[in-house]
Image (cartoon, rainbow, N blue to C red; front, side, top):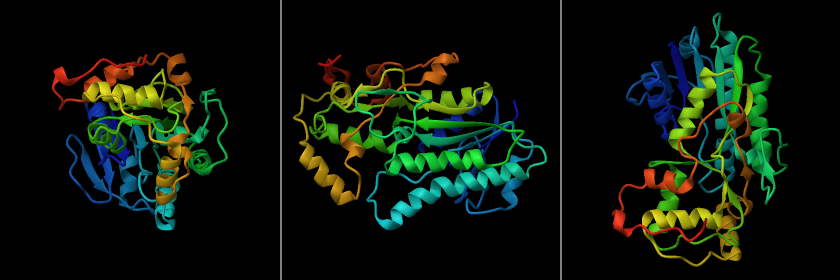
Length: 313
């Protein structure tokens, strides 16, 4: 099947991607700053800030997948914001330079992006054809994708995967939501009307494989077909974990938390009603298209009898 090189392969998303590509028959190489062992993959140390011997791992590879990006779920100090930006733009530019330097470049380059590209869309549905937002995350995602487009790689097909809320054990967003829900605090945030574009980590990894093996190019939304509101999402979390209804967190309280963390309140009180128009139009089949099924698959430490039926559709 050939070789797939994954940058950012030691984290939550990377491990899922390694497993998926390995199962499909690819030889997998993970680019890692630490050299940490990854089951199922050869690990090569790399410098995400510049050239090095690691360039040779891309020579003749079938694909390179870049999943690098500092977590947004931290206090947004000036230092953190710099790291968030550089971990996306810098690594993407370096991958582009490495691909461009190959005599036999990878056939496909899949680069991470995010549905933060669209900003707070309210009730308006957005697809890959929709424009970027003018807020911090919208501008960051646009610049991130611009780095892919600027790279001179005529022999390499480029795919920009706009990830939503990726659900799975070990993933920071899911673990945080699970912890809050177990503490009987799993109510809606504010009105709860804001949309949450989610996807099961298994489908995310499958979509990466699909992007490599297919012929799509450009932006692809990595979100489940049916985004749900925050109220519906939290209702499903409580049902899966076995917790009773919880009161909403008032908008002013959420805004106070955001202020303390340095976040735009739209991070929690806004939402993105993104749909995966490109995958659906090109035959991708989701294994987990229903949120309740996805959460039942993920949650495994709660006795079945404790689980409840969701109140919301």
